[in-house]
Length: 429
Image 1 (cartoon, rainbow, N blue to C red):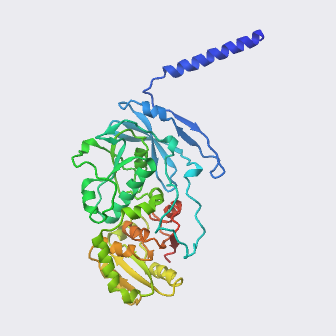
Image 2: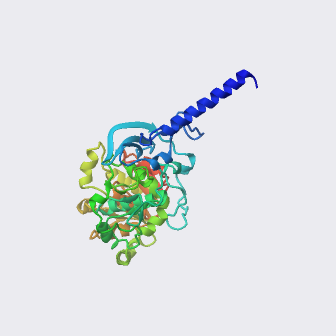
Image 3: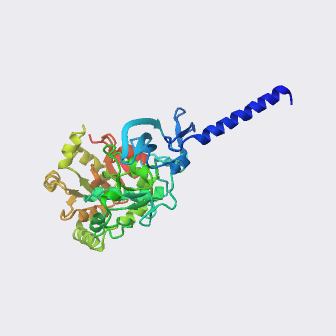
């Protein structure tokens, strides 16, 4: 080797030693460093950058200092991520830095089949699917805290917020159930909620949190905005630390839980008493429904009218009702419609001259839902109750395809992203 080569080799060794010394001397309590790598595939735009997480740094971090955390913000594209400061007291939202999060190809939903799917199609067991959930945080970004437990439960633990509205509870439950399945996280529901809804759905498998759990035992996840629930995915993925988290809001993450639709149908099996009420209802209507395709139809009104107007939209009206009903009349020789609504006076007046319409009893909400769930197909307007009466029925679901509120979970963009391919959009006009 020449003298010049020996000098270059010596300088290279010195540089490597200097870099190693610099890395070794870096304090561990510095902000978490993110390794950035550009991943380009044929399915994604070339200008998307993936921020790949250094999981070792998260696992080593001291909890007493501010550290950077990845917090998913599930917007319509489920691709916007916030980098935020995490402290002992919670999340500091003053310094959001944005970057694009790219889901690898295996996390994309299967291609949506061209509509219309033949009505002869069958899903095997009612409404069962075999596909992966659409998640916001990929496996290589998640953190596990092996051996770190709270009262025997592996951390982190996710507890959903109390909600005693039937439709909202089901959205909460389905979301936390899917978090446990998709992220292999420990999930629980509040004691009072479990006591109330286990009477309606005795097959619920997510256990209640300990009865003596105090508010100080849990960290409340921040409110990121209406219909934005990425904080729960971040907590379930271990990105917010080994804690017990209490979720806020009423999440209904269809993209996440649709992969477990078959399991959820078992979770939301109605009690024998409610099923008997359903049997009695159809027995009373046996002449009306004989040889007919039964279509459940839920109409949401009352306080939702003002809620929707405040967001620049309008509740579906009679024009939409007729469009939706004609959709089924054009495809079947005999169709009957079983209509439900919190505004009983309105639906009786609206459909008083329709010979192919009857109404649910309207005594208990859960009994009305069970009747609509037992129909062959469905029509929905807006709201969580209408979503669950339709989603669990197992047939086709007609919904207003031109209804749009930013981030609203029950609209066309979200259904198509989740690949809910038995939901059929039609116009309201």
